[in-house]
Length: 352
Image (cartoon, rainbow, N blue to C red; front, side, top):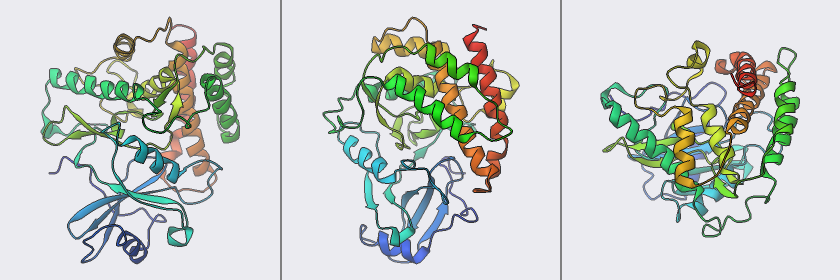
């Protein structure tokens, strides 16, 4: 059994034209003998990720979802450009092989990148790894350290200083996600009114302007095959920007389901943060602040923000399902998950 993620048959309605993709790929790689096999990775809920297998080599193709796309969303070329710029100063970024803005090819912008041969730590770690509690702690610290390393990259050194909009990142995020939640509402959704009002009333100043990933979590990192405690890659740079690093950490912790969380939280878990040896959310916060030197009297704002933002993303995906724009069954329960996150936010606000 392979420890690597396995691509599977392409989902119905998300097929790519084999001949078209092979003709495009052939312009950028040397060996194109034989048949091109296209499979799809079943994880992820935003952009679509395919594996291209040709002449004994494997590549990754990323494209936006099918159907209507909101203006500014799923900007594949922006993502590829960021990765191109970051690669020389942040070793964990995959090499970009090709970018395409010609919609005559696939009907959308897309890019092709190298495939990292490694282990993606998803909901359950492969049993074959047989990691001890001490191993799990080391792996966890390495994942957090790799995030800290990103936050310490000089944007100018990567030529990415123009990526952000300067001071006021926190306010822009709260105002933006509040607006987007309103646009994603369906008749069966919760209002989030109290949470949104609290966030607007409690916005801190930005602590810094750093390169941030904006979706940094275990299932977006790749661990080494030879040393599964070591991070060799970071994936999914769609939302990367320059902004407040504590907001980035808040986003990460929204996915961090720990061993003592309730049954509903456990049912939403997507990464192995429940394992013995994993840091708790509070331990992550303390470790991160100690290593970076950032000052923060209370992290509650950033935790509430992270869960609210996750709820907006889930409600956006649910609305696509509700309106029949996708048949992906995973999205059917997201309206209930958003309601649960609202209750988690309210408990944090009330200090429970």
